Length: 348
Ligand SMILES: NC(=O)c1ccc[n+]([C@@H]2O[C@H](COP(=O)([O-])OP(=O)(O)OC[C@H]3O[C@@H](n4cnc5c(N)ncnc54)[C@H](O)[C@@H]3O)[C@@H](O)[C@H]2O)c1
Image (tube, rainbow, N blue to C red; front, side):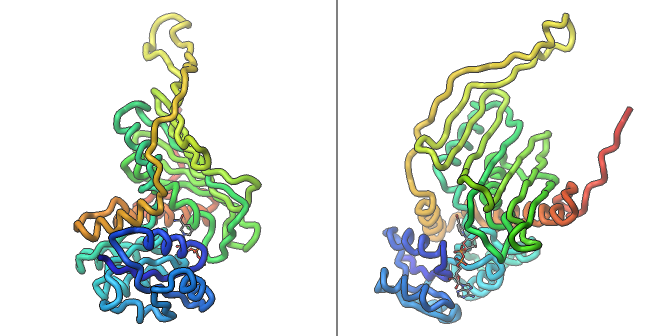
């Protein structure tokens, strides 16, 4: 039985308390929050847990084997580091930390201590995303040209991080997982209306090798809630709408261009393909519960999680480069150097 301690009981933490409490292979033994009212609310619902105001008290090896961190981003590095130094397994909400330097330090520490470092990229444990990856791997969609995603709503507004750091980790983690690679450069533009310097709306472009692209539009200043990811392949296209009953639709649609470069004019006509569509069967499971179960399985079996520290680092690499681009007026920024790329040379 794995004993779990959970820190951060604001908006998201209580969902983690519920999911871990529902699972058989663990017991939530303690919870921690510096806000006493948040602690009391959890204690009322789960009378057997120890409510603690001090994180140091939660890190007691006689009380917990693993720690779940659902506090604001700025605290992730320090709390995760302290838990790993006590030889505890850690589940930390996205993003892993504020900078790639911090992420590298946490990956190093988890390796040195041989502990499971698990990042809350919840969509990589969601059945529709796993199904999309299967569709891509089986070549049903053909060569992937681009993936676009929209994550919009009116609120919840944050003042500690911008919409890029708050919302885009989900879309970035899905794109990296679906394409199985990291982008080489990114551009990002945004709009800060509510708190100067904290962007409410961001448009991010990820440039992957082989001219593949990712486009992410995130906003907490939008009239409608949208959670849509579209994968455009050269054979078929798929749309994942997380708010729909049938979450994935595969469209046999496309535009075909004759491959021959010679011949008469007719050969250069493009042909639109309007085939049918279908929704693949997807085993329904709450993604957050699947994610919590996967954390426990990785601890029990000593497996490396899909969303391990390195995966967390890759997502923060994109966020960090996007932030540089955002503050340089949307210039393309190289992921490796974090430097703006020179303008493309125009050849006659
Ligand atoms: N996976 C998802 O879909 C999802 C959704 C929402 C939030 N999140 C993530 O969850 C984390 C928390 O977000 P939230 O919206 O719940 O934030 P929140 O501000 O609503 O809650 C944070 C809680 O942490 C407590 N806290 C902060 N620092 C603390 C400390 N040092 N010691 C003890 N308690 C402390 C606060 O008192 C508060 O109760 C963030 O990393 C966020 O990105 C993930």
